[in-house]
Amino acid sequence: MKAVIQRVAHATLSVQGNIVSQIGKGLVVYFCAERGDGDELCGVFANKLSKLRIFEDDNGKMNLSVIDVGGEVLFVSQFTLAADLSHGNRPGFAAAEEPQRAKQLYLDTADILGGLGVPTKLGVFGADMTIDQQNIGPVTIIWESAR
Figure 1 (cartoon, rainbow, N blue to C red):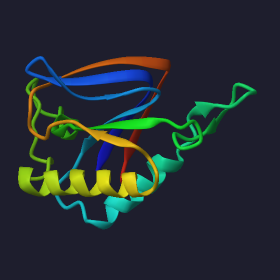
Figure 2: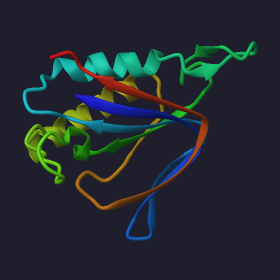
Figure 3: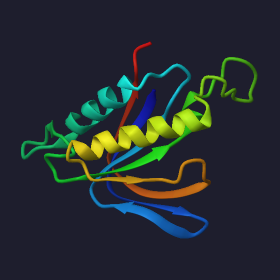
């Protein structure tokens, strides 16, 4: 699994001009399931994300989690994070999980995250989405599971 995590003031996700999901302060998470990812990684990632201290406290230190600040997560499936750029100029996506399995891992991770007390809004799996977000910081974290 791979994810790009961005701290935002707000974000809106649309499909074909229609707003599907929106959040206030929180995190936009671009999530990719890779071939061979096990179900256990859903919980590992959700736990890490719910406790990730990347919001500033009163002293300006990144000491607070999305839960601590009462934030939300916009959780977006993005298979392109599995891109292989090692050969030529066209990315290869052989490392991305098959769509049916990837969708299940995506939904399972979102369910676990919500169960941990993090309000979680979803994108539309496999759709061409437009995402407007206002980053704070900016703060961008890249997470990759150990293989």
